[in-house]
Image (tube, rainbow, N blue to C red; front, side):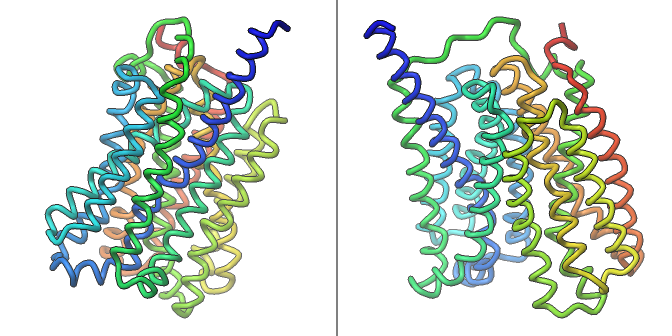
Amino acid sequence: MTPREQGTAARARRERLLVLVGIALVALNLRPLVSSLGPVLTEIRADLALTGTVAGLVTTLPLICFGVCGLAAPPLAARVGLRRSALLAMLAVAAGLGVRVLTDSAAVFVAATAFALAGSGVANVLCPALVKLHFPNRISLVIGVYSTLMQLSTALAAGASVPIADAFGGWRAALGMWAVMGLVAALPWLGLLRERAPVRQPGHAVSARRLVRSRTAWLLTLFFGLQSANGYAQLGWLPAILRDAGIDQADAGYALALLPGVGMVVSLLLAAVTARLRSLRPLVVVIMSCYLAGYVGLLVAPGTAPVLWAVLLGIGNGVFPVALILIGLRARTGQGSSALSGFVQGIGYFVAAAGPFLIGVLHDATGTWTIPVTVLLASILVLFALGLGVTRIRYVEDEIT
């Protein structure tokens, strides 16, 4: 190898390492702006005079912003590139979080939160595409680590908000630290602006309009949407289901905390084993079987073994990293993966928004949890069928040409 070739290879290794660090830091910043808010929302409402309606809007914004900005991310990436888009997304997160801890206005607080969520929504879409582009032979491994870091930061932000607020004088300190983290996450992408851009991959550009004709894109969208709807329904209603079954508040909260904890373990296991499998179908069968068992237990005997049901549901939530892995595997190029990611997550998060709302409506209408949990159980049967469909080896580019 000539000195010039050695220099090129070394530069490529540094570039890939910087991209990997950038993806990891993005993962750590995607959810804390949401999970850090709930534990101190009462103090924020009192300080900024937020009405119940406005507070409800703030808690509803994430899925709306993730959906809208998920659809907007691929055109942005096509115009300025994946790396610049990642930089802009992290700067938006940092700016939005910074403004919302400095303001005394309820309207500015909501607007700043929406701006930060817009950055997070764009980054949601970009990361699977970046993994596909830079680590095409390590998609499962990198996505598994990415998902683990995202869940870890979600749990840490939720658990640390109150102690930080108590130690440093209020909610502004608890939320403000994540603005600093957003700036840190922007640094690798700023450094990558000086590097050469990846060679554009051959093939026709994939767009959301063309993906409408792809059966695989729609199957994956419904798969992503249904798993997200179940995940958010569990976060919103599992403690109430267990409390009404006679479980005390502390144990119900412990069961809820198991969901992301088990999810992190599942993500790490997926990162370790998926690269060795020829097909993700066996994993989907195992995960979905646990999901079904968890809901059956919650339906038949919710108060008998709440920890077991929570563990089984946490394993079932492992379909989230599986969905992200499939986004990378069902497109041939980085650009195709970006478009598919935007299509799947953009529409999928709107589907997810219906989950907690529908469960609440059904509970209010029936006065029990039997019908709501039965509906969730039925949705898992549909999710199971969708999972078997999306694990067939197909590429969206082949379906839209």
